[in-house]
Image (cartoon, rainbow, N blue to C red; front, side, top):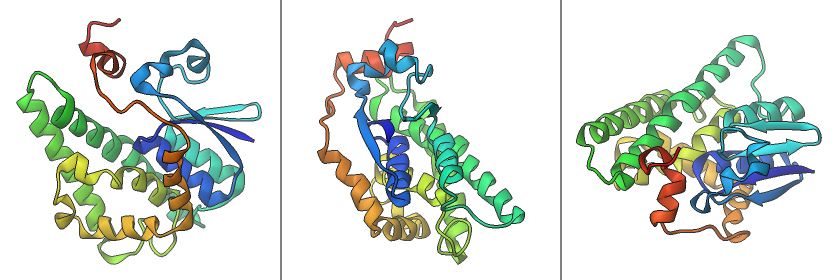
Length: 226
């Protein structure tokens, strides 16, 4: 059985969706970043970057959510496009989520909600870049139901993890300018696998407060930690 180290943030949730879609048996193992559990030596031995998610599948360990999606798709042969031209699109859009939507949305959340010193320049930059990346995806979805066309793939799963958080990333009303992203989100949310993934919220309890202790673990570089 796959051991799935997770919390409820966007990157682990896209893996939860993928595991559920593929019908793979897994054991969810909570890692609470606000308690610093990602820095436990046993966990760092699996993922030296001290982030979630990570999976352990027998003697195979994979970390980084998008690497995990590719690994699981390769393992099962499911939710992958057929043909080299579409495979090229798949890799391009998966990396677009991995290196664009995810990081810029994450930094936008940090500076909008958690930065304590204002940081007006950084806030405006990340709001702009997050909005721009989501706009690129919305345009891509303008004339197709899924990111690669008519077929639901791991790329849509990757986007779903973050699409759930668009109002928190960009503010209430953000979907008014992203109707096609909202349509994709609604379509995936209606799938039983998405509902099963969301049900993980009831399996374990994670610390909700972003207090001084949580800030030390979440934002170590700005809290005086080495």
